[in-house]
Image 1 (cartoon, one colour):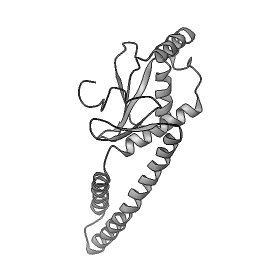
Image 2 (cartoon, one colour; image 1 turned 90 degrees about the vertical axis):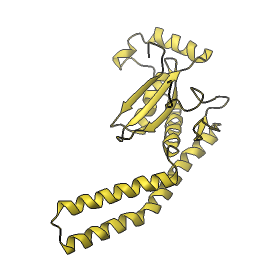
Image 3 (cartoon, rainbow, N blue to C red; image 1 turned 120 degrees about the vertical axis):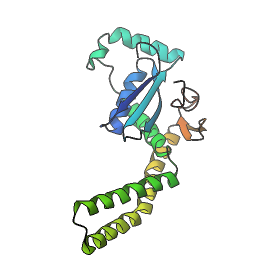
Image 4 (cartoon, rainbow, N blue to C red; image 1 turned 30 degrees about the vertical axis):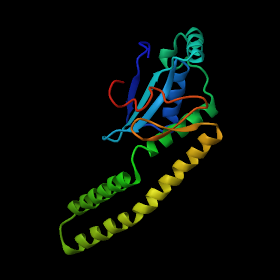
Length: 197
């Protein structure tokens, strides 16, 4: 971050709250949350970009002076719970909009099929095993619409939180719906993961 360049952090094991805290701390030092996506190897890719706004630069200068040892990960500005909740909401919404329902259904269907095949290969191949694996697979596929509906409900809860806080919906260059703070715009003007940044 000291270079003033966009920073992409790829993390495998963390929570949304942990990612939101990380983005919040970055905001205290002149950066802003740009995007969060899930990678093909099931990790999170968090992108933060420099915030050129005068308020962000002033806040960064003050925090660099107050917390000169911030790089130790301990001497940091205090967390603001409401700001972290809103960052988490933006991240959840961004992740939920990364794929369409059809894409999510295809991914889940492939995963369920692979899981059922793995179970089948773990046991000897006889008629009983094939029937049991078929039943497990059918049960998992029957749960697919439930999982998709639950995901939509979960995302809608966070959209409502953002709208109540005055965030507005915008469309990025890739056509994905995103939310920006009141009076704000998308950091990096579009999809920051697409080339250049």
